[in-house]
Image (cartoon, rainbow, N blue to C red):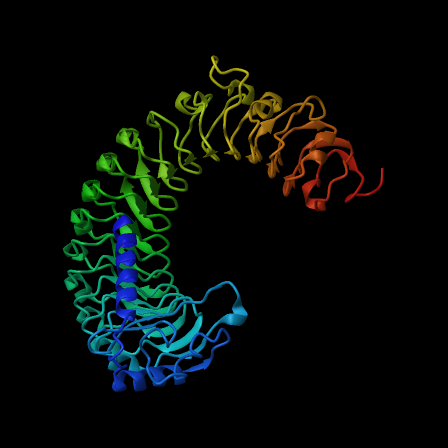
Length: 487
C-alpha cells in the first residue's frame, strides 16, 4: 500500500510541475479541440467541473479545471476530475466519454472516478495513449466488455475500472503488462478465469477482482509476486485449493479469499506470512484442521474462518486476534471453550456461533489474576450452541461490551435479579433460551441500545419503557405493556 501512496504523491508533484507552463507556451490546438469534444459529451455538469473549459483560449496554466500540460510542448498530460462529494446524487455528472480522449496522445494521467452517471462503452481510442501511467474510471456506469486493448497500454501502472457494469473476461495478455502495480476491476460482471500467469506481473502491489463472476482455480503463480500487499478475489465462484505457494507472499498484509467455493485444507504455509494482518477465508468449503502454523502470525488482527467444514482441534494462538470468527464449521468444542480464548484479557470481537459448545456460561471467566477486572470484548457471539447456566456473571465481566448474541442456547436464570449490562451495549440478542422473571429496568437505561431480542423465553411482568417492536418480546410466558397489550 505504501508504494501506491508514494506513486500517487509523485504524480501529484508531477501535475504541479506540469501546470507551471512557461509564459510563451500555449495549449496545443489539437488538444484544446479534443478537450472541447470531451466536454460536449457531458450532458449534465451540476458541479460546474467543466465550466472553465473553453472560457479561456489557453487550456494550460491552470485555467481549465483539472487539466495540466507539458511545460515545453503545451500538450495535455493530465486530466484529473473527481467530485468533491461523491455521496450527493444531485451532483453526479451525466454523459459519455468522447472517443476524442484518444487524441490526447501525450496523456499520462487520466482520472475521472466517482461521477456515477458517465456511461457508454469505454472508448477504444484510449489504446492510442501510449504514455498513460494511470487510468482511473472507477465508480461510473460504463458497460460493455472488459476492454481487450488494455494490454496495449504497456506503461500503465495503475488501472482502476471498479464498480461499473463491465462484462467479459480478464484479457489474458494483461499478464504482459510488466509495469502494472494496481489492478482494480472489482464489482463488475467479469466472468471467466483469472489468468494463471498473473505471477508474471512482478510489480503488483494491489489486486482487487472481488464481486465478479469469476470461476476456476486460483492462480498458483501469484505466490511469486514479492511486492503484493493486497489480494482480494472474494465473492466469486472460484474452486479448487488454496495454493501452498501463497505462503511465499512475504509482503502480503491483506488476503481475501472469502465467499467462493474453495475446498480442501488450509495450507500450513500461510503461517509464514509474518506481515499478514487480515485473513478472510469464510464462506468456502474448506475442510480439515486449522493449521497450527497460524499461531506464528503475530501481526494478525482479523481472522475469519466461518462457514466452512473445518473440524477440531483448534490451534493454540499465542494471542487472540482483535477479530476472530470461527462460527458454523464442523467444530464440536464440547464442555469448554479453548483456554487461549477464555483466558485472554484482550479481544475485541469474537464469534463462536454454532461451534458445538456444551458448557455453563459462568465457567467463562477472566484470568484469575485479573478478576474481577473485565475482559475487553466489544462483541461476543455464542449463539446456536448448547450453553447453559446463568448470564449474570458474564455481563458483569463484560463492561465494554457493545454487541452480545447468546441466542439459541439453554441459558436459565432469573433475568430480573442483578443483571448488570455494559452502558455501551448496542445489540442484545437472548432469544430462544429459558430466561425467567421480569425484564430488568436497567435495559431501559441503555441509551445506545438499537437492537433487542428477548423472544422465546419464559419472561413475565411489565415491559420497561423501551421502544422496540413486538417481535422483540413475542413467545414469552406472560409479558405486558407497550408494544404488547396492557397489563
